Length: 135
Image (cartoon, rainbow, N blue to C red; front, top):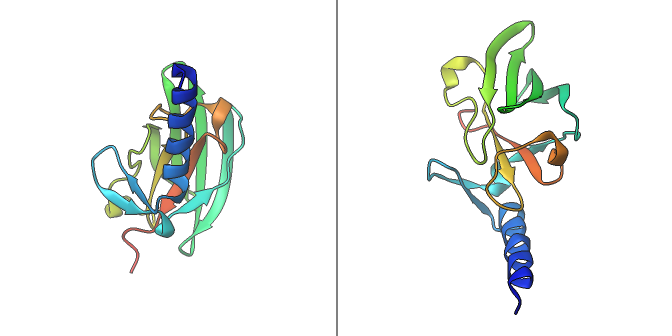
């Protein structure tokens, strides 16, 4: 098998493993059941704001591409809870229930382990939500 075929096969297998293996390994080494994650719909735009109802809370997420990476802001209602969070592959963005969000978010690269950029949002880079500290 040529190296290009092997690389393509590995990328396909990584994409399948993120979406259908049943478990995602975060950058911190924790395992998360894929069945407990919801995909937040995104567009491949350099700047976007979306509002989603998650666990009974209206959450506004703003994403902005900068030269140093993709950054996220999180609001609940009219209150800014987090600002300027660097988005990295399989790394929790909120990390603490005390912030006031009903769960946590992470990006997953379906074709490798790169940090997300806007060209692949919603396809290669999925924004996943886990209601990990909901009762």
